[in-house]
Amino acid sequence: EAGAAVAAESSTGTWTTVWTDGLTSLDRYKGRCYHIEPVAGEENQYICYVAYPLDLFEEGSVTNMFTSIVGNVFGFKALRALRLEDLRIPVSYIKTFQGPPHGIQVERDKLNKYGRPLLGCTIKPKLGLSAKNYGRAVYECL
Image 1 (cartoon, rainbow, N blue to C red):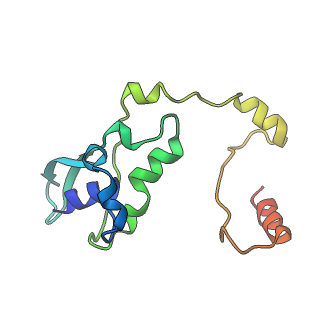
Image 2: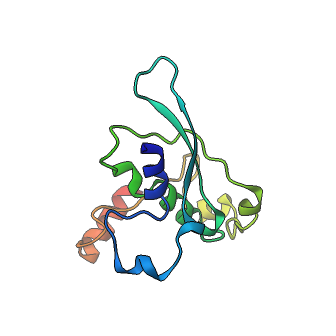
Image 3: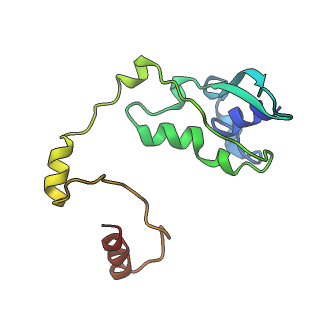
């Protein structure tokens, strides 16, 4: 039951019925829990295998794929704990990714940052900061 709920929530499921549900058949976009096995030595813990149709994802968009798979589902109240342990991406989908327009050296040169990792993040809060405070928050991340 939990595996099916995770598959639904991370693909086509919503918390409530919405009027747009009747406008299309969601079957071709539904994630499916296709295998469940108990975790050895752990009571009430299971590994669920979930498959998603490629039509669910926008081609070439890592952001779309990860948002779909791990977006709201980790806040899913029906589960006490949830962990993503493995992700297998079909070669046909990988081929839709164009890659970066230029390499890491160009990014390092633009930022004048060398010898350390470059990290990306979303400034919180995402809304409500003045331009000055948003700039200040971004500067502090550098």
